[in-house]
Image (cartoon, one colour):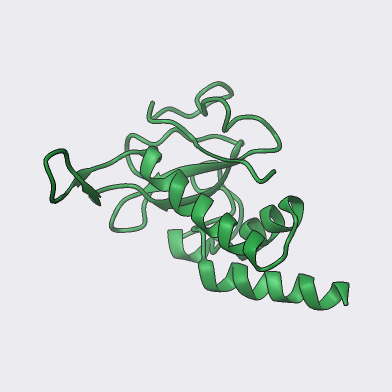
Length: 142
């Protein structure tokens, strides 16, 4: 099973700042970025972070109907990456291949990095690049 979890909202870095289940090795840990693609101030970070996704000012439904964009947190970042994982699984990848495609497809330049960092993991989750990686994996299987 492909497992994706939010890194947490402590804003801290350190060996215990990324919450569980995100801190488990077989779980894709997702940190949050703001509208400028910088680490959101509240987002937990550390070596367990795999990728980032938007997590500030996310449009969401509100009780009583309607929408609001006042919501922020890694709880909004994680589902974006989980959705990408579902797309990759639907293309025919197994859970390990989907996780690899997400991580290999992440874009470090999008968050101002050149490679892995504790703040951004492997970079911003990138749907197009991950789907291209999935297609490469599937072609190699044939």
